[in-house]
Image 1 (cartoon, helix red, strand yellow):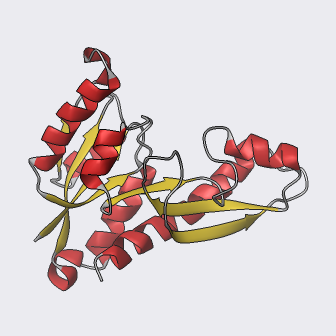
Image 2 (cartoon, helix red, strand yellow):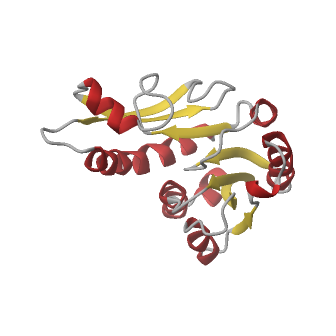
Length: 191
């Protein structure tokens, strides 16, 4: 069985989309793949309850208890590796990861970003896209490299910018596309 470990920091809607797709498409039987664990750097992350309700192992590792990013990442690697992951999925994990962490999982670490990369890496993507006058925005699933929001693109979805759009309205429409393309990218990783 090939294990997926998903990292979250909040509500975990992309994690939930992946788990629901895996259940609906019976990835365990058809692909030999399962979501083995969901880890969070925040004890109050809403997605933990979703995972627990489905019998998925969960773990919290609070980054505030570590003296450096590297120390936190080293312990996070130890926790993740206990599940022998074939793939590590960042699903709203709001931490910049150290080069050592990324190198450890290089080629088997995915992220989703709410823009059509390479446009608008980093934060406040929707506000920046509206300020730039973009006619389309979207989401990108990519392999993680040591460069922020960089790496080979696996999936993208475009969303039109509508007259009167706010950053919040745009973010909501982009999120619906994220929930479609992230499970698809994860499934394709194992085919």
